[in-house]
Length: 309
Ligand SMILES: [Zn+2]
Image (cartoon, rainbow, N blue to C red; front, side, top):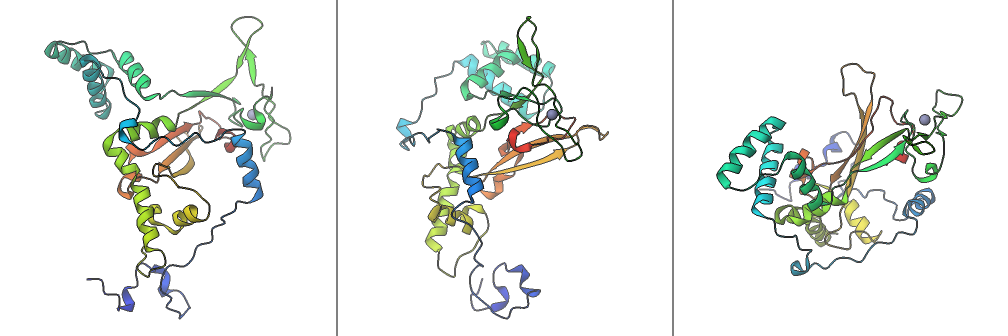
């Protein structure tokens, strides 16, 4: 139905009515992307990466994919039960009752909730990491703050640095322990798990096929943008910045914001989420595909959020 001759249906240029320009240029407006990063960002990259180098790209041959050890009937039934329980927001009692029914009918042991959680953690490698932080949420003791004994952060309202001690005395005399810690959830464990499943693995490779389609159309008037996958930005990152050379490379969008979790606005928690841009646009923003990486404990908002990131 779309007729290329019809000037009124020029695809998706919604701002054309308010614009004063009479030019009817074909194709999208070029976006301003810097293929070379500002020095500040490059320095930050270098500081964050240290002597880290990217490991070799794993083979794409499916036969060489890492093997998952075969599960026993008990483990398999327990995991399926756990997934169903989790998806239905079941109670702990509910888990136990249904487990008993399953156990007597399958004639195999259904693992306890604690055991099944441990098993899924072992299979996925999904281990949270604890990072020291200032009890007032000013900073996380990472990067330049790593070895400090007290919080150096000065908020915009304060005249002096916070000064809260990093450590307090441990349970055993002469030992010390951090005053507060924040839990960081791993990102790569989620990505690996998504690649270990045939369906989600295919979805993750959508980014690469969008890129290939978009590259194919570069320079033609047919170009149509709808999402990150076939965006100009993606093409520029690929062609000029040398990124996304491999089929399984992952593009993530990072988003952070404060949230009041109680009616009283005394506590301000900050959440950091990652959106997997590899996925088809219809799946990207679904709750089950959002990676929640970090939640600061509150009650204060973080001072230097970058130290947490
Ligand atoms: Zn502090």
